Length: 115
Image (cartoon, rainbow, N blue to C red; front, side, top):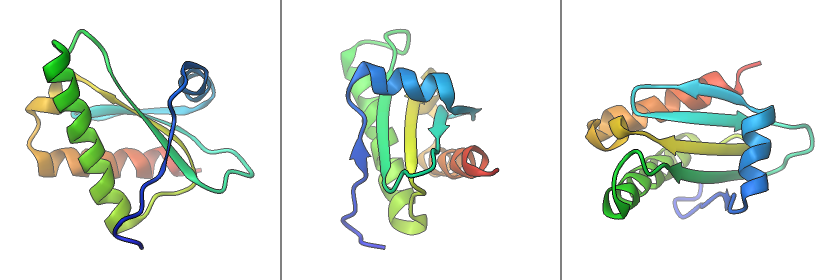
């Protein structure tokens, strides 16, 4: 796997709503992950979201950065299956120890992509 690999990004609201509506949802202590795998998808695309319930903009951005870094590590070590993924940061995301957060993401991706 390329150590500098970065998956595509989901940026528009309709893309997030499509994953939420049609995808599979996996909740872990550190985050909620929504996974949508469709036939014909040939790349991984990822979106990140953190609601205002989590805290002010500084806290939300820190939470989002933790999710991005966890995804970067998982993608580099394990690779990402093709499909669309939305990582939703929760209050527990910023409080969770980072190695546990990475394991939460691995578990969520495994559960979300199994048939």
